[in-house]
Image 1 (cartoon, rainbow, N blue to C red):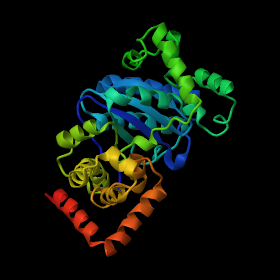
Image 2: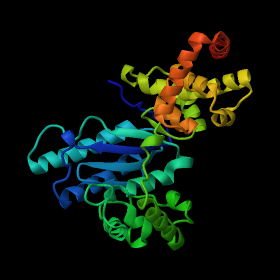
Image 3: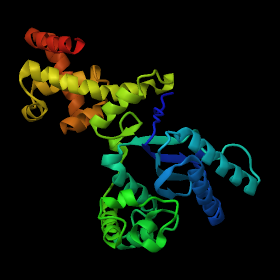
Amino acid sequence: MARPLRIQYPGAVYHITCRGNAKTDIYKDDKDRNSFLEILSESQNIHSIIIYSYVLMSNHYHLLIETPKGNLSEYMRHFNMRYTSHYNRRHKKGGHLYQGRFKGILVDKDTYLTMLSRYIHLNPVKIKGIKKMPYKEKMKYLKKYKWSSLPGYIDKRGKQEFIDYNLVLEEYGGDNEKGRRAYSDIISIDASGQMDVKDIIVGQSIIGKENFIEKVLDKYLKKKPDMREQPSLRKLHGLRVKDEIIDAIQEETGKDLDGIKKSKGIERNVLMDLLYRAGGIKGAEIGRLLEVDYSTVSQGRKRLRDMLKKDKKLKHIVGRIEGRLSR
């Protein structure tokens, strides 16, 4: 079974999620939640972790953390084991509390830190029964939600010692009244829409711009990963191949990506097909790149296959492009 890559290095930032076994609740009451936060703070001190944001939901939690020592797995193993021990001891239970290993998405700190913080803080109003509330009621509920780091971001009286507010609020004017008001305002804007991060996760493992992903590939993923991680690694390498494919088509046709998008011609079908076959990129991602829907990608690739059977000149052009890629 494929699983996300586990990428660790000093200074890495992660969006962490962990769910209860069989989606069951991981807190019985507020005493459990308070114990969870106490253990979170203690584990942070032991492993020198920076915590930017968190939210506790009924059957899972979200964290936005930085690992100055590159020790994500060690920290999460210690933290999850300690809370599981507390929970089982208090409720006279045994066995696993969580569903498999935690999910850790590597985050491009310079580009997506504040976005991930807001995404985490919005979770309480995304659940059934709350997300359809009138906007004002939803915002009232969100700002009063106790089990989140949001109160400290919008009101200094809600600050907690183990949360680092400075870096996120820096983008909004600083850890002061102005910055907190600006953060509160943008949270309100986000809550009125459908903010989600699923569409920007690459290879089940990274949220970041292409130069960040390139750096991670070159510096930290040269060693062969676990076999179950290979599909995720191939997807990351597909982003690198994507640029090579676009460059090869431009060299052959004279059209860059914008030109290919505008032309809606055979070059676009060739690009769709090569991204899928040579880049290992899925149709939905190709659609987002070319600003078309999935069905257009599928139809374009089929149209190209039909044309290649009849058009020798086109077949020769595609062959030359593939030759460039092989070099």
